[in-house]
Image 1 (cartoon, helix red, strand yellow):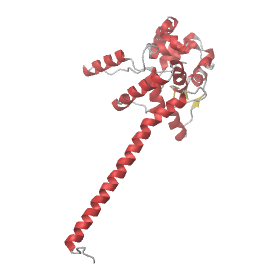
Image 2: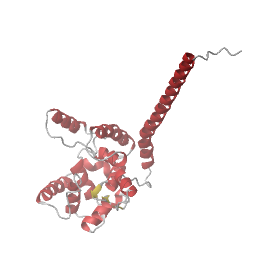
Image 3: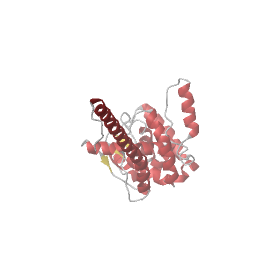
Length: 249
């Protein structure tokens, strides 16, 4: 016997309950999908970092992926670190991250100084290590952002824990942008000076190193007086690098 109440009021109640169950089901599906996306975003850098440990793997940057997808012309010729003039390696370390061999991915002293300065109202300045710049180029987006900087920190710590310093430097020097659409030391050396990265002079290495903070406005082949002064400083520091570069020898 069918005892279901078919009155309009009961029917309306059943409709409301069905809608509520449907709403909960949709919300649960959205949460599951969001969790899957979040898990993918967390695991992707881990998996890619482990893959990048293999010497025959030549990682690419997010900027290179952007250029490929948007059909923009770009140049990158991977070279092993053994085929990069050590003068360039040393100059980049002394210009970009003098404590590269000593820290664990983050230069906490420099970062603390920048935070204190920002809280005091001073103009913001960079405290990115080479490890942080490497993970940014590999996994994140460009431009200034507190969100991106917050993501850089754990990524850099994990990357430095897993990847040897020499391999980190090799990846960095092959993915960093040295002019619009010019990625890596080999392409940069050929583009700016017409020589291989293995054949750079001390001066050319210093000029390339001081170009990195702003490759869209700095031209190592036609350096401004200010850029030449910076290159003088880095050339001297690279000559006296000593233990600062032991980890990449």
